[in-house]
Image (cartoon, rainbow, N blue to C red):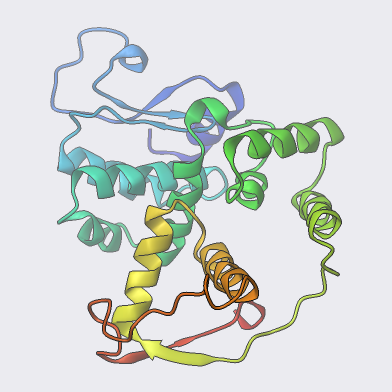
Amino acid sequence: MTAISEVARSAATRAPRRLVNTSRPDTSNDSMKPDKVLLTAVGLRIPAELSFEDWEQAGRRLSGIVDSSTWCLGDWLVHGKLHYSDRYKKAVTAAGLQYQTLRNYAWVSHRFDLSRRRPNLTFQHHAEVASLQPPEQDLWLDRAERGMWTTKQLRMHLQAERVKNTGETGQLSAIPRIEVPAARLTRWYKAAEQAGMEFKKWVMDTLDGAAGATDAGPDHATTASPGSAPGVGQGRRRRVTPPSER
């Protein structure tokens, strides 16, 4: 598949289509062969035995798709990080893609298996609820689908629910910029990724947890030693920009 029109037509019919030719000879219906990368309406079906070259070729083709590429690019990066940990970033650059953008796509893709993705909702709908637990994700996606909510409407309903449950006003305030060592920031990103959480939410949850421990009294509060984690306090400092300034 080389034309964008073919991709759009495939997504519209929800019929799996071959995205990459592999080295095996064609002897039957390509769309049913397990050794092909298949493009579906909600993501990629990627065979575990896929070679690096074929995986990279899939990335090059996906980079030309505009609208429905988010799920596919997320799946592509998740697969690359899992199978080609020492080479996938080079392929990202070769495909002309932005790693940070792909990282966001991959985080949402990782949070939703293909079977749980809603073809009638956008990738952004799923991103809005990606930080929730799966039952809550399904609940809110069901509501969005039934109510035909836009992503903005879904976000407003989610904010109203948080205000209802926490008593918070929902008014946002910017935090001041702080500079932290690059090594520490890298460790934070890795911790958020391992927890399966968006970085911003991981930071907020971690700070809330620390505040809760302080509220519980000195017997429950814990303070990390400056030397307790490798890389803390070392290296070049990076500026952390609050969400309101991004």
